[in-house]
Amino acid sequence: MSGTPDWSRAVRSATTRLAAAGVSSPRVDAELLAAQVLGVDRGAAVAAVLRGDAQSAAHARAFDRLVDRRAQREPLQHLTGVADFHRVRLRVGPGVFVPRPETELLVDAVLSAVESREAPRIADLCTGSGALAAAIAEARRRAGRPAQVHAVELDPVAHAWARENLEPLGVHLVLADAADCWTHLRADFDAVVANPPYVPAGQVPDQTEARADPELALYGGDVSGTRIPLRIAAAASRLLRPGGFFAMEHDESHAESLLASLQATGDWSGLRGHEDLAGRPRFVTATRAATTSRVGEWNNGPRD
Image (cartoon, rainbow, N blue to C red):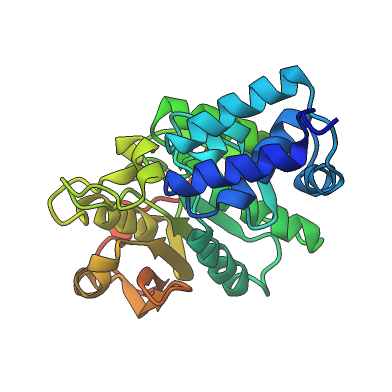
């Protein structure tokens, strides 16, 4: 019996292999890969490990293949097909940006800003997998106060993933450039949130797994990485009603320059930078100013 493969030894061995490969959470990843092979949740997989359940030959082969791929730093979410984000489980895979835990702070900021409003209109620009839109829509649904959530994505591959995640939640999704779509809509959104591409051109992400994300979702369009974020902010100013709330993630190198550029437009009041849980500058919030030079660009007909 001592030579019979079991899940306890398999996960211990996988943990050692993943740690040697530089994976930051080797034990957790090994348990999640075991759960993927077994077709159960992580809790059930951990129970199988603790009991030392026997591992079938088919399961052993499938597990070894997944561990090998993870050791090569293929994103865990590509192997499991899911990413957990702010109490929603998203379908993800190659071709779509994998949402990061720090981005959940934007969800909290938007939910707080619209907490008192009934059926608020909220737009998620550069939605990617649909993470922000899904989390906001689901949080409002759980609270018994649904929101009207809209989302935009430019890339057809990412849009397909977003559709899978957002259709069940009733989010209105369009395939378009978030910087210049919806020009026909009147400025009556209560909140706009965005996690646009913002990495400076030529900069390689520190985390190996992040390099698997599509370049279209990473790079901000110029050396500074602010070209696309500033275009998204301009789109947000067109969509928001006066007093509407804006939240946008940015690169930590943008903390001062982005705030200064947004301030110079005259479109915003109450501009404020926020840090993530690691103390790094991560996102900006603002309120739509009551007057703007862009008023003439708005019109009155809400059409989808």
